[in-house]
Length: 290
Image (cartoon, rainbow, N blue to C red; front, top):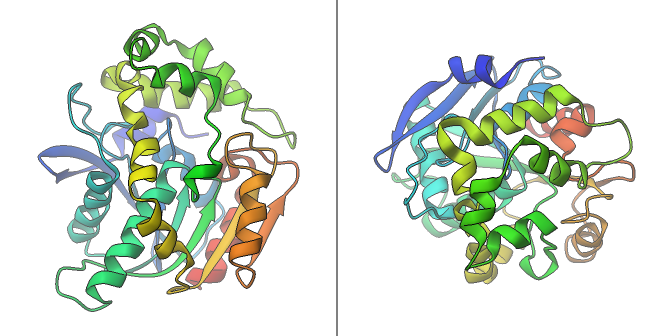
């Protein structure tokens, strides 16, 4: 298993909004761009990457996450994270890509689709054409989002900073295991990799600030819903039903609102399909990218 230290050492630095972004470019063939979740990093894509042949996988640690820059008082936004994706595409010469979006990353993907719809596919400001999306467990509909206890504590305006300051690997593990499914246990190595990614360069101390995406989703709910439901590109859903945050209850609405989009409901998987169900995630990506 690749450790976070090894993964970070392989990163290619890209500048976005004046910040250093740790990006990766692996393989050859049609491009897949992986958009990771909170509070982890692009390291989550490694099990999926290992199962893909003939595909080029581009990914990044969003600003504030993983091995990317984490200035403590930075005004984090989903729009800035989306800018970072576009800057990575420009740096790597990506002109066409399928997306795999998980958790935090689903909002970035929705913003990318919204921008593409507004400017048109071939507008000179668009660095790359999004040709398809695989979605996994994220707050596509903010009214259905159910934050974990840890997130609720971090969101407390009076004490969130104190909770972040006191966070350690054991506390993070408690939160992650509460969102994991039953197919197999979360390994100590996987958990340690998540902690290293979060704690790198003091990132755990801004965990409360990185939850900005929850408010962003409410602010941009209609824009991002329209981007999701427009049917502008082929899509697949690979969805863990045991996820207490964005699980079966979100899959129910997806089935209702997007009945023609393939929806793979995974009854033994929790919040982390890239880690818990990499075979299914890779198959969905290969289907769209092939």
